[in-house]
Length: 324
Image 1 (cartoon, rainbow, N blue to C red):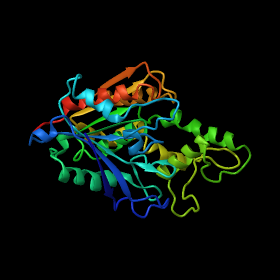
Image 2: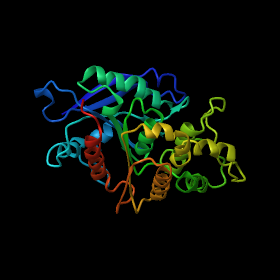
Image 3: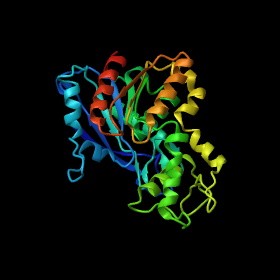
Image 4: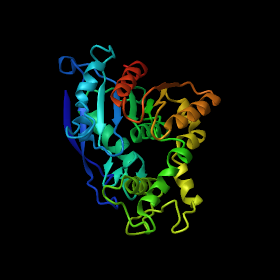
């Protein structure tokens, strides 16, 4: 059963995109929840860029690639796949330009604080969770996978385990080319905000709003990492993007990562953005630091096996999270 709620978030109020601070919140209750009084571990499921929580729960049916309702993905995990029951929470992280990337920004809103301060306490108050970090995990795919890394590696007192599925990482390879694809798409014109239907422009402005926001630079309130018209990389701005890169910030978060009960990294070997290299480097750096983790690869691309990987992550979390 999936329950639909609404959450009013002070953490998102006042964002410069004027996106709403009231958001959808979906809570999956495992089979048998209403027949017992016991408490359950909780897995927070973060959606990807280009989605809303509502679209993850009930995907559009008129797209090229058909996707089942998320309940049809979750039910088998706790049925025939044999995972121990958990509550699964799906918050909304969308912004006008794509996704808040699950980080704090004055432009898109403070999405990290929104999850920590607004969503988690609301869920713990409304449902029979086990309200401790050791019984609370976070996972997601693509931007949601990056969000899982960001939330857990910065807040081990809230999340005790993370599963990063094809998460944004190694941005010198996986993201830098996007900047120049955008410039190619607009030709000699000066950058002038996101263009509806131009995916490159939407990605660049969304990432800039989350990784290099500048409230003093209207009307778009961002610093772009590439100079106009020269095309030279603005290293000071790019370094701000890199500060969010897991392969970079892993070094500063080792103490936090050691507090986690589990870390899962999973990626497709045919990823369209070559994210497998970020996962491999991140795994290498964790291994060098002596941090136990699980790193797996699958033969998929970026998204083609997402539902299968969600199931894998949930089954893994069901073993890792404490039940008392």
